[in-house]
Length: 369
Image (cartoon, rainbow, N blue to C red; front, top):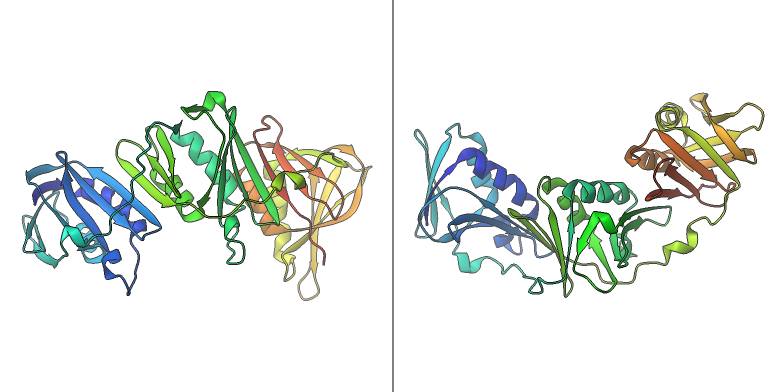
């Protein structure tokens, strides 16, 4: 292989594939990336056997070929050189790097030693999504993903295609987030419903990598692929059955509050400074004042409270306790200033929605202390 490539193009490509590289002493090849020429393009690939990333970068190809090269030293060289143009050549499983004032030789491995990246052969059944809509949906639900060895099915996001709508769902059993995309937001050839659980690390990569052109989603046997013209992310799916989460969605509401997102976020941040070991803050609503009192106390620090103006429907309440971190996680991803906060006492789940859009909700359970 012999190629000439602009440093910026190569650096951008390396930043895309780096998350697929893993520091595995049992399989040292997983510390490598594969560089090869494919159809007059330069392909960079990485895999940790759970997640694989492929991207194409433009450059001048003098001679076809490929090599697996250790990512860390190669990335360090490319990041630190100041030359705009880089010449790369493979000789005897060594990668030779040359610029105007620099030369390096990195020992690599034959292309055949690099793990085979799985392919999804069924390209006829797919979902196509605008990358900004997809990223917003995944951002909004991923805050509720669990990190549990006991229940691996909660360590990802549920993709639930229902023919007339596409839902993304996440829960850790203390909170739940659901985002619905409707028919006008999804192009698809799927004729039947589909449910799969996507690992959170894959979700994070999709959010990080895709920005511009439409994203195609393909599902195969225990595999899922997200791709556009330049990047493909292939991931294993999580085995298991996702819990029947719909049963915990409140069907009625004792108290409904209309309030400002920024006011509530400010109150949670301020009041949390005095919270206890379980990150508890207290909410109180008296019927007369039309304000939500957010307060916390600590025997070693003191106490504080913050009053948030609200529009109230339903009954007042004296004390509902929440984990302030869970409240803040939900508030951060809501994309409207006008919120609806629905509560059902100190034992049942509460729900956030935006006043203008019912396509997303975030549910959080009160805590007992």
